[in-house]
Structures are given as C-alpha cells and as structure tokens.
Length: 204
Image (cartoon, rainbow, N blue to C red; front, side):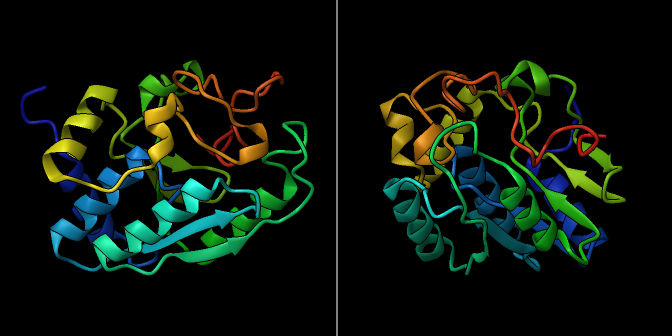
C-alpha cells in the first residue's frame, strides 16, 4: 500500500509516544528485524526483555549472545522456570507471570506478531489496545511475509536463529517445539495453537 508506514516508522513513533515501552524478544527472525530497526533508528531503545523458561534450545542461547554482540544491547531476563516436561505444561502460569513482571509499569509493548503466522493471528493490527493490561500493543511486522523477513535479514546480514535453517518456522522451548511451517511445530502433539502471552483478551 502506497504511503503505508514502514516498520521503522512504526517503531520510532512507538518509542517516542511511550517512555515505558517494552519489547518482548524470543530471538526468532522477526526479532532480528525489529531489533535491527530499533537500533537503526538511532533513538532511545525500549527495554528489551526475554522470558527464560530454563528449557530454551542451545541455539536460542547462542542467538541471544549474537544479538547482544551485534546490536550492542543488554537483554533483560524474566525467569519462568517450571515444569516444562511436555506441551501440556508449556506456556502456563509461570510464563504468563513472567510476562506480567516484564510489563509492570509499561505503557506499551512491541511484539513480532505477523498475520501470516497462523489463523489465530490473521486479524492482528499494526497498533492494538491490549485491553487486559490497558496499554498499547505494537505489531510492526504484522503485514510482513516470510519473504520480506528473509530479504531484510540477507540484505542487512543480520544474526538469526539457526533452527530456522532446520525447518523450524516458529521456535519456542525445546520440549514442545518441532520443525514445521507457520506455527505448526509449536506444542507438538497438543491442541494448543497460541501461547498464554497473546491469547484473548491480550489481542484486544
């Protein structure tokens, strides 16, 4: 669409409008692009927070280090260690509680949600109101495709999660993530399609 704001435009506006903004980072390809755009804007950065369940892939930990080294950032950690023995335990109360701690005092947050990721996300908007928390929610890549992401990663030679090269389109915790397109590899063997971080009413 002609005149549509770029991800950089959306992020610059979000950071300017919201002094207490937080970015949730899972070190997937979406976050590679978002963090690069934030750093490239040259302004104040949001708090960048990851939720550590204690069962992240080793590749996630190495990508975390690569992000900090490439972008010159320090990622804040919220601990969500618990019983992660399988998909039935994944993304439960510990993870949601960690999100609430990360967003305590925030007036907005930034996510890597894209409409293309899953049927539950096709209605996502560029800027939403998170009714559950009374804050703004920015999805700067909401209309981006996989092709858009990889074009930017290659163009900018960005660090990215190596499991994407092994068929993992979406990457969560090791016990409940398998290769798959979209979000098909998440919570393998269960009926789950969304984690507790983005379910209604948080998408409000």
